[in-house]
Image 1: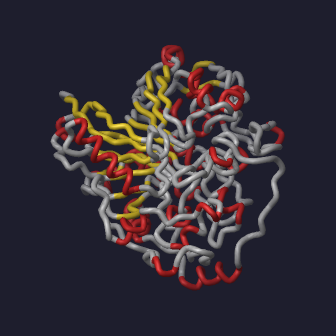
Image 2: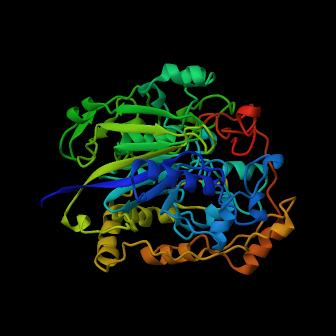
Image 3: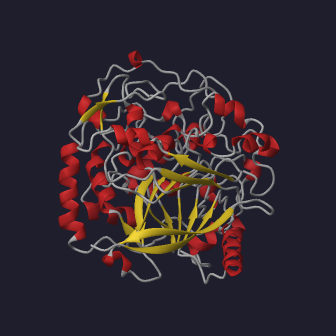
Amino acid sequence: MTSETRAIQIAVEGCGHGTLDAIYSSIAKSCEQKGWDAVDLVIICGDFEALRNARDINCMAVPAKYREIGDFHKYYSGARKAPYLTIFIGGNHEASNYLWELYYGGWVAPNIYYMGAANVVRLGGLRIAGLSGIWKGYNYKKPHFERLPYNNDDMRSIYHVRELDVRKLLQIQTQVDVGLSHDWPRGVEWFGDHKALFRAKRDFEAESRDGTLGSQAAKYVLDRLRPHHWFSAHMHVKFAAVVKHDASESSANAKSTTSEVPFHNAEEIDLDMSDTEKNESGPVTATAADNKEEISDELRAELPASFQKKGAVVISRPEAIANKTTNFLALDKCLKNRHFLQLLEIEIETDAETNAIEKPFKLEYDPEWLAITRAYAPDLHLGDPETQERQESKTQLLSEASEWVQQNIIRTGKLKIPEDFDTTAPLYDASEGISNPPQPVEYSNPHTIRFCKLIGIENKFHFTEDERAARIAQGPRMDSRREGGRGGRGGRGGGRGRGRGQRGWGNRGGR
C-alpha cells in the first residue's frame, strides 16, 4: 500500500480561562498573517472553563473574588458558534460538574469537543491522545469518587489525574501523532533551554531539581506513546523542548513481544507503592509495604519500563511505536503581550483511504481506544473514595474487545463521532448574577448515553431523578484535612494560580 503525506493546519492555545472570543479572534488574525483561510483544528490545553450558568461557577476551584462567567455560555446557548472545530482537555480550573457528564469525551457546545478524562481521537488521519487534569500523587490511585454536591476537597480532587485513565493510555500499541496534557510531563524542562526558563520563573529550578515540577502521569504517557508533538499549558509561560527518547531501549529490546530482556530504569516507580504524600508540597513518598496487594507479572508486562521493579523482566515496547523525537511546546494564557497561541502544520502519512477524506475534517473515534475503553469499563468506580481500583491483566479482554470493535463499529461504519450536542443544564441568565448560587444537580448527558450504548458498556453516569434528589438532600461529604502546605505546579498539585498572589489569579485571565 502506497503512503502519501498530508498537512493538517492547527492552532494550539495554552490556558483558555473562559476567553473564547479573544482566542478565536486571535486565531483569525494569525491565519490572515500566515495567508491561511482557516485552521483545521483548534486545541486548547486546559483551564477551558465551560461555565454554562452561574451554578457551574460553584463547582470550579477559584477564589470567589475572581469568579467570572466568561464567554463559554454564549457558545453553549447557541448565541455564538465556534468558527473552528475545537478540542480541549481539562485543567485545574474547570466547571468540573459539566465535564464529569462527559467522562468519555463529548460535545460541550456545537463544534467544541471535550476529550474526557483520557481519550484518543482522529482527525483527517491525525491521531491525538489527551490526558485531562493535573498530578497529585496522593489521589492518583483513588477512584473517581467526587459526586455532587461537592465539598471544598471535592472541587479540587476532581481534577486530579487517576491511575485508571493513565493505565488505559498506556495500553496503546500503535503510534500517535499528538499528545496533550495540562501540566507538563515531569522532567521535560531539561530537554529545552532550562536556564532561560529558570531565569524567567524563579521557583522552577528548585522544584525541578527536587522532582516536584510537572506531572509524573504525563511523563508515563509521553515515554510510552512517544508522539511527534506534545502540547501543554498550566505554567503560564511559553517553552519549547525536543525530547530525544532513549534509543538504547528499543535497540536492546527483542523484536518479538514474547521475548524478554532485563531493564532497569533509574527513575523507577514501583507499581506496588502507596501514593501517600507526607506533605502536599513534597514529592511522593512510598514503600512497597504500604500496599499489600500483589501485582502480577502478567500485568506488569503490559506497562512501560517506568512501572517495573528493579531487576524486573520487561516485555519490549510495541514495534509500532517507533518515533524517537517528540517536539514539546507549552503555551501561556490568553492575555495581551503573552505567548498563548501557535499556528503550525503537522505532516502526517496517510494511506489511500484516509487521504481521500476531504476538508472540513470531522472527528472520528479511534478503534484501538474504543477497544481499550470497552475492556476497562468494568473497572470504573464512582462515588466511594475507599474503593480499591482493580489491577488485573486485560490481555484477553483487550483482544476480545478489539475484535468486537472491528465487527460492530468499523464494519458498520460508526467511527464518525456524531455531532449530537444537547443542552443539559439551564442557560445563563445575566439578570440573576453569579453571587452565591446553589450547586447544580447531576445531569445525564445524551452524548454519554449514546456512546456507552455504541460500545456496549454500562453507563455509570446515568441517574434517576430520585437518586439526584437524594444526593442533594444528603449534602456534601465532610471536608478532610491534609498535612502540608499550598499546592504547586503539577507535582505539588492544584496550584497553577491558587495561592500565589499576583503570579496566580491577578487580573482577568491571570490564572
